[in-house]
Structures are given as structure tokens and as C-alpha cells.
Picture: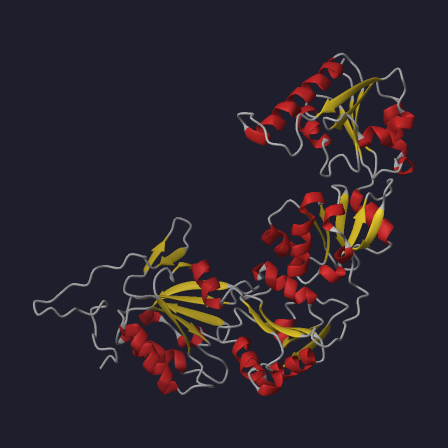
Length: 517
């Protein structure tokens, strides 16, 4: 009969942190296996040394390389794959002979450990038990004496080997985080922490529960002194107190996309998580998770200038402020209001950044297919801030140019006639069967995407939560096999037909003058 395989987690380094199950598995094994570099020393074996007997067979699984280059035809990965296959074959020989094999693993066997490569090659063939161990993450938190996560916080575990921009994005979006595999990656990790605004929160732990243990503020660590067995920790911020200091304050205008969390970019997530104060229209603030260390300042939708001034005043006192906007803050949203007030002399020294978000037009277009696949114009039908005459002229001009139209703010309780007027105007320049996308509550619980012909557009079904996309002469609408209608506007535009006199006809075949007269 075949022997049994054990993956034995040894914990972070102190033999006293080994579990009783780990000690029993080692004591009962016929074969003790462990990985090591070419120097032959094994940290895993040193942790378990007092429990290894002289009569047990030891299998030292020596890596052919660690970070060196190789002439293996499959490159670095090919060389390691061959090594894992050979190591698994060696252990399989013992298992086939009926011997019990215990593979030692620092920390936890299935957490960034070498054991996992043996597990994938052997566990489906032999009776296998994995004994968990205390991870380096738990050990680091214990040595720092700070909670990793509390309440609704999430923990993000990040390998330091990622590219710097990826590190920055993941750190910025995290509540709490641990960055592993540092060593030579430390300068990159430090730069990512600084870029994401988290350097001052970061802690450093080296060789937790091992000889040579070191902890401290990560910003104070000499990069040349950092070994592989070290981690960066961003602990819980539940008890953090927003600081006030001259020169620290800034305003970041953040676009939350059309419906909150699923549409947020990592950069926006980071800005919202790192803010001391959140300022915005209450409906948009409700999309942002509540964090105990932050102050929230909600207001009505019609006080944009006052909201901007309030945010800038907070920043002038040293607060990091996130102004929350729906969609993209630069498209009919808060960025303009903030920058307009920030241009006043009293606020010119306050840093202001604008972070993009998924626009309502892009979100609606994606749900409908690709109606914005060619040139398009974005127009708000609200006449609250500009006269209808201006809106009508822009509609005529864009329609005569055969642009797809993304129409924001089409209607509300107090504005019920604009959609009908827009339809009448567009029918002068577009064919009655032009596809129109009605996208309502995109990304929300009442999401509805419909495609109708322009002549059938009913203003009564359009409200403030609806965005309209009116196709060009080239926009297609096709019913697919599942019954869903998809729209797209081809990227290739037909060559204009020339009359004998050399004049070009209108793309829509209707009026050729920009005004439609």
C-alpha cells in the first residue's frame, strides 16, 4: 500500500509556534523532506530540527537556481518545472514503497510556499493531509502589536514582485495590506507606498519570531539592509485620527462611475480610502463605504459652488478631502465647480486633483453594445444652466454633422418637454428608424436598456436617471439569438458621394445645411 503524504506548516520561525499536529506528523514520518537553495541550508529544517530523529530518511530538495539566469531551453520557469517534477518523482518513490513522507514548509504550506508545487503533483495520487501553520502575516501583526483588520475592513496581500504601477494601484485601493517578498523589491515597494499616499502608515517587519528580528516605520528603513524574509504592513485604520497640518491638505475630485463600487478605479478607491473628509451630494456619498476615521459632509445637489468652497476650506486647514461626484467628475459634474472656486486668489495654493470615472455615456454604451464606436457628441438637455436655444442649436449642428449623440439630463419632474422638442428637431435631420438607446439606472438595481426607433421615442418614459444615445446614419441595431438588441456604430465611415457639380450630399440624406433650415 502507498504511504501517506503530509504538508507540514511550521509557522514563522520560532519552534514554539509549531502546532501539536505538526510535531506529531514529523514524529510519525519515515521521510522528512525540505526545500533548500544550493548552499544546502534549510530554514524549515532548522525550525523542526529538535523533532527530527537520526533514523528518519531526509530528502533535501535543492533548487537548481533561485534568481540566477539559466541556459535551460524553457528559461527560468522551465528549469523550475523540471526540478519540481524530479522532486515529486523522488518523493513518489518513497510513497510507492509505503513510507510516510512529511514535507516541511515555513509558515503555512499553501501560502506562497514551496510545498504547494509538490501538492499539485502528488495530492491526487496519494492520501494527503495538509497541516496549517502560522503565516508570516499573522506573525508580523503580532510583533507590531497592531490589529490587521477590524469591522468591515478588508485585507489585501500583495507580492512585492509586481510591477510598480500595479503595486501602487493595489496599495491605494486597500484598507489594510501586507506586501510580501521584498528584499531587492523594497525600493519599488517603498515608491509605491509613497505614490499611493500610504508611506506614513506603513510598518516594517523582518524575520518575525526568528533570530535577527527587526520592526519599525518602513519610511526609516535602509533599502540596502532589507532581506527577503521581510514584509510591509499597512495595519487597521479604525482608530486613526485625521490629522491637520499646514501643507498637508488637498482636494481630490473623485468620479464614482454610474453606480458605485463595481465601477470605481483603484486610484479612485485609494483616494476615497485615504481622505480625512468626504464631501458631496448625499446620493453619491451613500455609494462610498463608511469608515470610522473619516468625516462625511453631505449636501443637496444644487449647491455645487458652496460644496466646492467648503472642501477647499477644509483642505486649507490641512485636511485631505475627497469631493465625491457621480460618473466622471469632468462631465457635467463637480470638477468644474471645484476648479472654478479653486481659481480664486484665496485658494490658489491648495492642491487640487481630478480623478476620472466611468462616464454615464460610456457605461450606457457598453450595456447597449458599441453605439459610440465612431465620432460622437455629448450634450446636456438641461436648460437650468444654459438656455434652450443654445441646446437646440447644438443639437442641430451635431445632428447635421451625423454625429452619434449622448444626451445627458434629458428630463426631470420639473422638465418634461425637452425630450419631445429634441425628438422633433432630430427628426428633421435623422431618419425615423434611427436607433435610440434608452439606458436607465445603469449599474443600479432598476437597470433597463431598451433600443427604440427615433420616431417611437416616448418622452413619458424618460426621467433624470435615463441617458439617451441617438445613433448616426451608420448606427446599426440587430436582434441577436437571445432576443437582445445590440447597437454599434461602425468605425469605417463611407466615402461621401459627389454630385456632378462637386457638392457632397448630406450623410443622412436629409438637410445639408448645419442649421437644418
